[in-house]
Image (cartoon, rainbow, N blue to C red; front, side, top):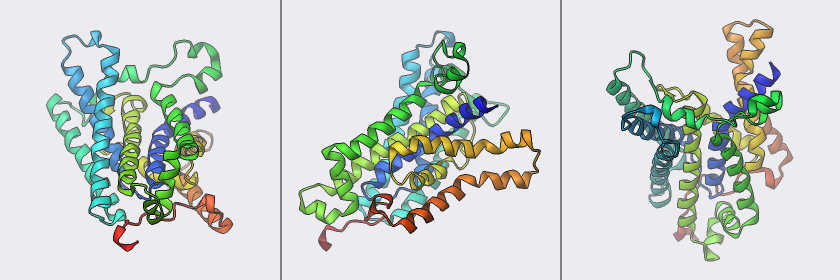
Length: 331
């Protein structure tokens, strides 16, 4: 049961890791993108559309090419996520709209867009249930190392995941190194802390905000693609993401804006998200008790936020200009 729990916690945490890593990169520029749930939804449905078009172009689905079965949904996901990030950047950076309101609008828009196209695909295939299954492309995303099953608990915990799970860890590590060690990363952090000073130093504030938000959205969108193509084995159903996008935003606060911490934090959040299922096997609980346990990730985030506020250490605080539009004329 312990091995199974850890395995499921990792799988549950991978979408959160993608969302948190993308949001950290975005917030380091000073943009507070509360539209991450919508971005992940758009990333997921964009990948589904790509996979659907590819599968239906095949005369024989058993002859699917692994490269195109992965590349087409992946590129569609990145493109859809990029466009939604570009929309957010245009509204908040160019038009200087309120970031909180814009983020919430992006979430509503993204979920609605996903449900619209998802419902359209369901009607096209004429499914008896309100969902579609893309098993041909999904099997390539969820394929694990062939020898993992022969290594017992070690293989199940560390080697039995699809490539997107390992990519999430690599992206988080690279993002951490980028923010700490590279000149561009330092410039990005400067924009998030004090855009006026960064602008005076010759840093193009708008460019950094646009790039960080769009790249962050593309990374977050991969979380939606992983959830559909790997976690639920290629099954798309409207409103199927739950509150994972909001958990990804909570994870950003929990990990104090550090992508490398998000790796462990995502597994912890993933475990807290599903722990009620395993506790119920040991101690039968009623529905209300299970719902209370589901609150655990948010309760932990609030406790960490209180603890960091009491410590009042600068490295544990968000970027100083987070959520504030930059007006160059006010310098």
